[in-house]
Image (tube, rainbow, N blue to C red; front, side, top):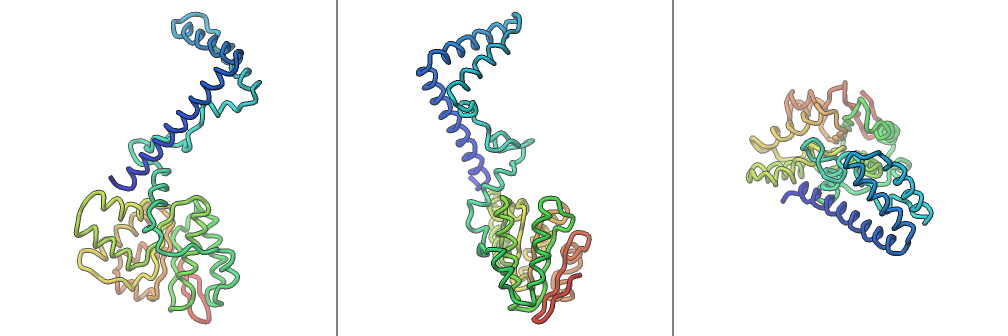
Length: 294
């Protein structure tokens, strides 16, 4: 069973437990209060009449029942708990596809989806190296644009030691604090996932290793350019993920020590055209003494 199916099972079981607990509370309340019991009995009788096509007096008996519940000082939602997710009503599916609540739960549960540390954005924005400090303001705009921003790629290119990875981690941490699903991987981890899947071809492996990178609301790939280049793996899987996120306009953060020319030389026009597309991307070049926004 893959991580998504496990999340569905947990969501469905949680809903069942909520309803079972509500039933116990309702039965306890009925046993303890005669007036509530009588109102509920009347309501049940009116429901039968209504089903048989007799004059509709169901609304009146329903109002009486609600009134008796209120008299006891109990929120009626205690006896009829709403689902945690309104989109799927805690079924785990919307139109035959995994609901966002399933995706978020599955991604959150797998520690392998967060290879970068959780970092306090506000704290590090004050202590960031001068070369990258101004980018924290741009990053804040990027974070605040979620979930409806036009510029959904945030690319940070520059030499080592300027704080690119810390900024990427801080962005991801902010998205997580907003309740968004986030996957952070180094380029090395990305290729390891790709290679593991490529050599096994099990559907559950694909869902656990690759689907989170396609489905998450924020993907961070750190240190692009340091990964190994495997034939039929590195470029193909990188393009598959970048292209899917580009088409779906999903938030993506990339850090790299490569120059833009270095990126196109290493990855080719197809990946570069998606990655640095100015219609959807904010591209930043960071050096030891300055930064440039393009």
